[in-house]
Image 1 (tube, rainbow, N blue to C red):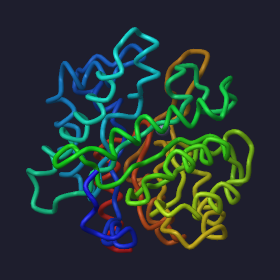
Image 2: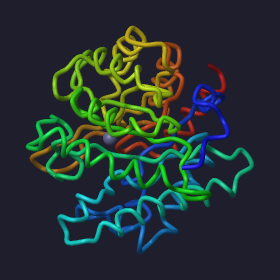
Image 3: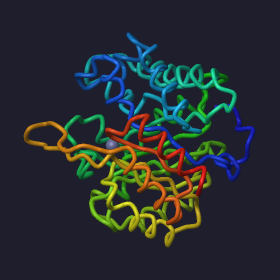
Image 4: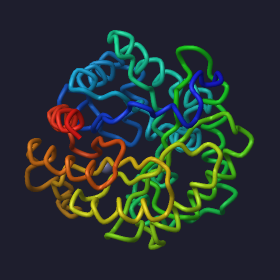
Length: 309
Ligand SMILES: [Zn+2]
């Protein structure tokens, strides 16, 4: 990664609105995202659909967008017999696609590399409990490999910021901190998936996780994602008590996931999501976006309330 023109502290200045879900939006556009490596498949076979999703979110008012690389990793690719070079290329390609969409707009949104947790590679929902059958060395190596690729990226392939997201545990956050250590020039945010108003998925206090990552020189924001929106106000209070870093929240739409039937239940109203976003800004969130099942209509509402908050 080329050294950011903006210092770590100012990189998120004027940034209030993150984009929403990528996977569900690709489905709406007719991309086939079945299978564990959906992102790889779409990155290689239908990149124009990824660009279209980015474009829709920027048009909706997002001033930072995340790349379609959540599930891209060498270890994940290796499980399917794919070469590590292919994973590395997909990571960089995802940044390039986001940059090409952003270049169509004068406001030039920030490009954030989406980096899912180790559990996202296991395809068994392990990121929602964080009980991994691996050593902390393996956990660190999983993250280090991706960091190294992005740290060496140049020009259009270099993201502005790394997003370590849907983190279920303190152990994984600490492993990332160690993996990041050689690259103090990089800027990163850390967001956790939470099971209630105080605890991350694995059970540690969000407050303790936030305090730990706040100490890292790379950290520019700390937050919560992939969590039920009803929990967000309390979790913002926990984050605020733990550090003075900018707070970023991008919860799910509020629809429920029926694990037995493997489908989403209920509905999500973008206007209601916007009303909640106004509360999150008022409670201290600097940046608001959306995770699973949120769409450009949700982000349009978030952008609207961001203008007035
Ligand atoms: Zn999610």
